[in-house]
Image (cartoon, rainbow, N blue to C red; front, side, top):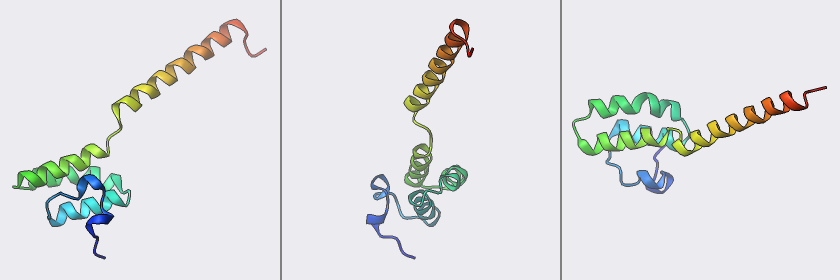
Length: 94
């Protein structure tokens, strides 16, 4: 099934046309991030074209967790742990 440029993510509309990269962009648009993480490094290493390498790395970067969200998750877990320890130490479950 042919994919039009409007069906692609906005950041990928200007990517170069290359069969493997096009398949990865379609996989990204469909939410198959595991495939993108698995195949993007291979395309980036195997390609002779710098624009294809950059596009593959961009796709890979888009599947990684946002560092700010990771930090906020860690801070939330630490706060929950601190509040739980305080509660157990002062009031306890019974």
